[in-house]
Image (cartoon, rainbow, N blue to C red; front, side):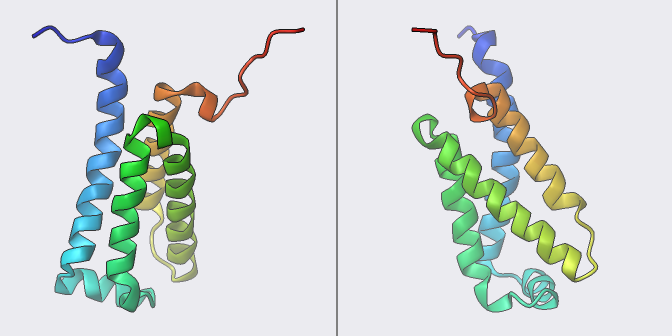
Length: 123
């Protein structure tokens, strides 16, 4: 089976953040003691399962080509909230910021119109 190089880079750049977010969502749904402890420190322990489900749904929307822009918007909002929550509790914002940057890079490589206006021909 031959790989199409046109789809290999966008696929790899999309898979990395998607796998990270999916793993995070699954861990939140399973709800281990370390997840509960970390979430309790930020005051969102009662919302862990909902946050995990949100991560999975938003990632699925991002992966599906027809809803990629909606998924991008929702993931951006989700991780902006994670950054704000971490900042307000004196925690490091590196992890959510890196994941958000990877999501933006993947979206840009997949469909530049998510960030740049589409050129319209002059009538």
